[in-house]
Length: 330
Image (spheres, helix red, strand yellow):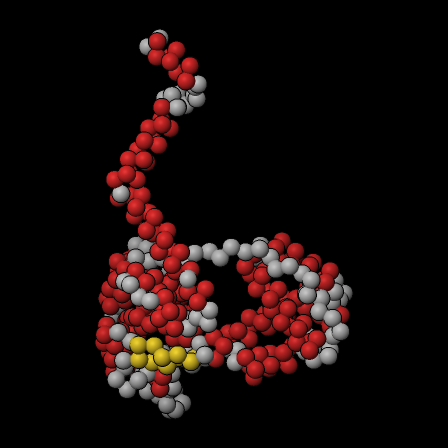
């Protein structure tokens, strides 16, 4: 695909794109190229009609609207790059509307559910258990993205373990404090963490692994978390490392933390991204009022009574006149 490698290089040099971001762009653009190949077309000469056909194909393959929108965004960036480089005289994506999407609210864990997960990790025996507890304590205590945590180097930790430095999306660096519980779990892990690899060289990663990357992978972290969910009686479908990030943010706001502070800790460039957690708070507070306020409970009971009075036991719906006539015959 002509121009792809130079486009990806631009993302690294000018925007500080992470390897995960580059992989996502590559997958999206190569999928578009394969689709065009089936139409006897090429990305260099693709038209708006080709782009619309690809988007329709993504929908037919069952991709969510958010995924389709993200892939269109990748294509827009690519063609904008080709246009600015003078390799295309037009941008075939310029007049294509973004698919309508609704940002879903994050899945939530209660503090009690998080505590159950941490307790289950603490019961795991041996070095694997020590590593797992340190991993989960750090996820919940810092709100790091799992890709940020598994790719963290030992040198990112402050000497007293009270904070760490992490480079997030867009190459933005932030300082994140580490709480007491997480520090204790971290000390236990550092005491037994492998210092050197099989080749005898020093291991730079905080959570080293024998795999190709040299460190624990996101996929393995997800697998470990789902195993713990089963042990705790939680639905593993609800669990992912990102859910712990959501729990970190939501529980901070519940405790009265400032929204701007939470934005800084999460590494969000736009506070609008952080504000989704305030919507979660609003929903939960509304449920609390409905369940516990006396007038709300009374209204719910009255509504239920009205529904019952409109429906006879046999399920037949009657008019008020039919209801009165029925009472006369009883």
